[in-house]
Length: 260
Ligand SMILES: NC(=O)c1ccc[n+]([C@@H]2O[C@H](COP(=O)([O-])OP(=O)(O)OC[C@H]3O[C@@H](n4cnc5c(N)ncnc54)[C@H](OP(=O)(O)O)[C@@H]3O)[C@@H](O)[C@H]2O)c1
Image 1 (cartoon, rainbow, N blue to C red):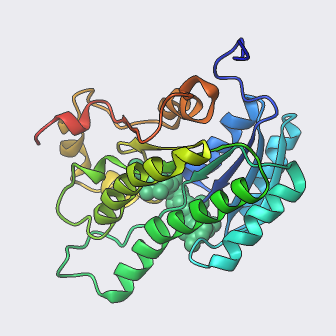
Image 2 (image 1 turned 90 degrees about the horizontal axis):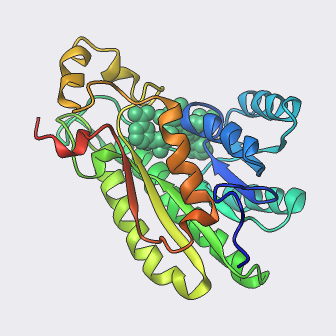
C-alpha cells in the first residue's frame, strides 16, 4: 500500500545533519548513507566535514558538505539552501549540533556559558526547524521530518551538568510542542535521547576517575556505543515511524530507570 518493502530503507531520501564533523553526527551520516540516503553534512570544522564526505562518496554514497554555524541564522539558511540545491527537497532534518560547558553548576557558570550552550543546543535547533518548516511549506514538499538529538539528561542528571541538562530538557519539551504545531504541515518531530557514549561532549565525565562507579548506575552496566543508536535512528528517519510524532526515544541501557 505504498509502504516500502524494507521499512528502514532510505533510498532517495535526503537527510540534512547539523554537527556532522565528529561524534554522533559524523557516525549518523555514514549509517544513513549506507541505508540509501543522500546526506548533507554541516558544521564549523570544514576540514572534518570534507573528509567525512569523501569517505562516504568512496563507499558509494551521496554526500555534500557545507559550512554551518547553528548560532548564526544566516548560516543555517545557507546550509539548508546548499542541501536543497544539491539534492532537492529535504526529507529529514537532524538537529544534532551540541556543546557543553564543562563540569559546572548553576553557581559556577557565567552568562557566556549559558549563551554558548543554550544558543547552540536549543536556539540553533529551533531556528533550523523553523527555517526547514518554511521551506517545506513554501516549496510544497508535502511534509517533513525533524529529529532532535536530545539526551537522558533531559530527565536524569547529575551535579555539574548545568546548563547542558537544562538545554536538553527544553529540547525534549520543544520536540513535543513542535510536533503538536507541525502536524498540520505533515511534518513529524521526534527526539532521540541517548545515554552516555564516549565523544568530545561526554569525555570529561567518561574519562574521569568517577567513570568506573558511574557506569554501575546503568542497568546494562556499560556505556553506549555509536552502533546502539543505528536502529533507533533509522526508525525515526524512515517511514517505519510514519505514525510517530512528539516521541522522545530513549536509548540508554536503562540508565533513566535507575535512581542512582
Ligand atoms: N556523547 C554523549 O554521551 C551524548 C549523549 C546524549 C546526547 N548527546 C548529544 O549528541 C549530539 C552530538 O554530540 P557528540 O556527543 O557527538 O559530541 P561531538 O563529537 O562534540 O559533536 C558535536 C558536534 O556539534 C557540532 N557543533 C557544535 N557547535 C556547533 C555550531 N555552533 N554550529 C554547527 N555545529 C556545531 C560540532 O561541530 P563543529 O565544532 O565542527 O562545528 C560537532 O560536529 C549533541 O547534541 C549532544 O548533546 C551526546
